[in-house]
Image (cartoon, rainbow, N blue to C red; front, side):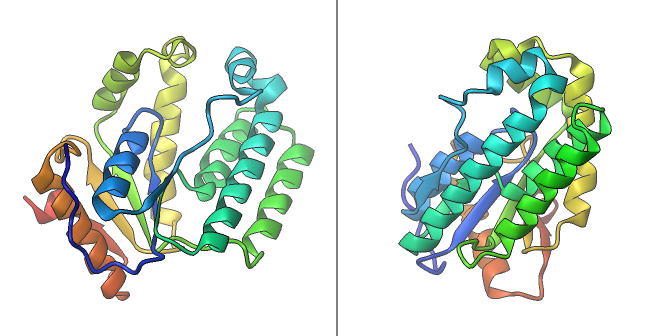
Length: 228
């Protein structure tokens, strides 16, 4: 049980988590939102009408899945803007475009026409006043072997049965994508160097978020290196 953490973050701060599947975004979203007394905003997985079909046939369902996620993500962004309160968000809309849609296009699962349509809709969304940018993006990373171990332990059938090559490609894409992300400051966490069930670890994460929000000239902070 993590106790609440005193902090000086703005009351309407938006903290967004990013990272590949199985890296622990949802768990940290819950822990941080409780510690900060913010509201959690989770990725909508349950009730997704395309997810299982997508894992059975990437080429047939990738465009449908990405459009569904994009619409749900934008509705979430709109709600956060209207409520104007502190949020911890499980996964960013930027990953949908920069990683998942791009992956499907690169692998031939999305046509040029569909990819252009998808990207055009995303660009229209981010220009909308309902679209708040994060104050800090927390990039959760770790060794590929550690992440695969988490996926196996979680035991979701559609993930366990997905070829390991898919997960390695996704992992490498995240490694590349984070170096191109410039929308807000980045806090880099390594799953082998922190424990979100440990009070001290959570307090260090909160202090790092505070540092990035207060010092806008600091654009990147690796917490594991800071603690080394």
